[in-house]
Length: 433
Figure 1 (cartoon, helix red, strand yellow):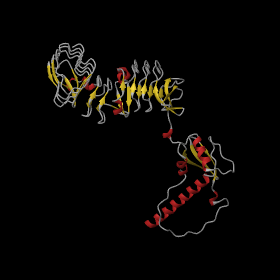
Figure 2 (cartoon, one colour):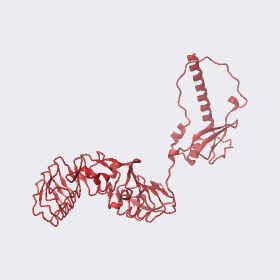
Figure 3 (tube, one colour):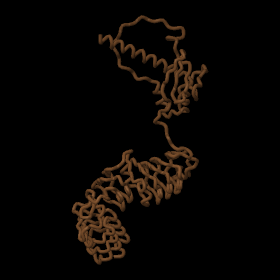
Figure 4 (cartoon, one colour):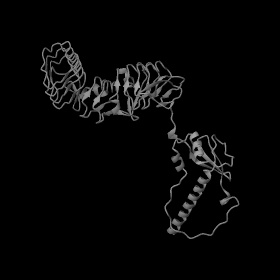
């Protein structure tokens, strides 16, 4: 009984494949109408190239080879040999008298085949939903040339009156690479903006005073955001990124260059960030990167990070939590991030510390002496700036760089031993000492 069923199923499968192949061959001889419900009444045989061009006109974006492959079915498994059946009689108009008399593209973009018995078959969409690009049309652009190649910058809102702006990655076939200064300044209509991966630059005041802007999404290609790009965007509540490692390296020229300054809520891959894990690939965290990230209550930083710039984590829930400090000093892993007013007068940095963040001890008026262990290779920018009562500094023998303004304004620091390992002392490192 089981063998009989298998034989029956295989016969049915072969019959269906035969019918599909038949329909495909007939279809290739038809012309498709370029708009809904317009059929091909011509007896002219269309070439495959002509059908492909028509499909392209209706939104198909694949290659000619891909289009051709759509009409080639895959071979089925070979079934058991069945008994030879009696030969049936042909109908008057071919096999069963059924063929394809016309075809058209319906309002949903589906290819519809009309059979000679007036039955219609939906052969599926010419253009898939994933190919739809919800880019905002009507923005204004300015053309530029970089290394002889034409590119575009978004220069303004243009004719757009939409609440949600999605900036395209190309315009007139050329890449959109930046947003000009003041481009959307003062706009009170837009509520969200999505910036594609192609854009690497956002100019000064680009979204300043966009009073109804609530959500900003930046692509993975962003490299630089200029001064006050999001100044006075007081209603921002969401800031979305997709590339955490890339965001750590973005140059932010002011706190208000960062949408997070007002939004407070950071989203990574669509999920709000509570626990922030810096990727292993990151070696430097630039200034203002996570400024005012209120939802960030836990942070981990890999040992490979060698530089943490000023205010990188300022305003996060983790830095605000006094329970995370030990003797007035906050460490994240092997990185010293910040000291507060409760630090002892004489302090020794933990032996396994690898990095002192920029401005870590800035303004600590109680600090009188500091011992820096041998694991530290760099005294970061403004690390001890304004420590007016600091009198004694003991540096480990592996420090190679004393950075910009490192001891600026340490007025009681009358002498300091510079180890032989030092090869760079940056400007104003000991100014006003």
